[in-house]
Image (cartoon, rainbow, N blue to C red; front, side, top):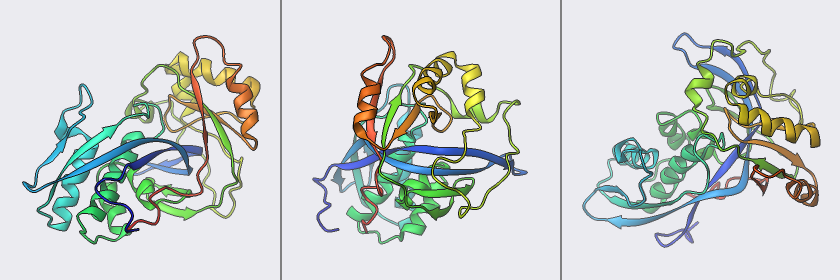
Length: 282
């Protein structure tokens, strides 16, 4: 993959959870999940500039997020430490994915930083090593490093890859920020869905255990999901919200439904990816 260089635009794609079951909880409070992650062709984009002073600088800070707390900066510094690397980088982030949308944008950004700088700095860490590094940053980071559509278990770090059919997704974005911690911390959250084996799962099976909590606490999520379900019974929330989606075998069907969105609702269409755009990078 020598065609990826410092001048490249590095994609950080969104994910959808095609189902999300909470099957238990560990003694340390972490929830045990089962889900299928699907990458889609909606993405943030990152650019990197080399620095000789060893500093990590985010040229495009997100308002209200200190640089030391930003996942992209933390990912770069973690990689420096793990690899004993003295090189630095200036990071430019073109943010397209909404925060608090359940699309994994921040985690995807962090994973792309790990993959890109491992390649650009030639630090030589393996992809499994980068996955472990990603888990220290957040539960969704490893799947973006892993790079395959996959059935994930545990806290989101144990993968069984799956082949998924081509599909176009209508994604609706309620204008609310849903904090993941608030949903997982809700006392009414169902935490005992029966586990299934990856071999048992088939496309279209399952639901999102977080959906009821998010809908009860954020009426805009409930409103958008109810409208989408009236037109597409398979509609579901992704992650902990706020975004909801429905998949269609034909792109034209997703386009037609997008065209009928009520005033005040916003959405867009994305196609499912066979794999992460950086799945083969070394």
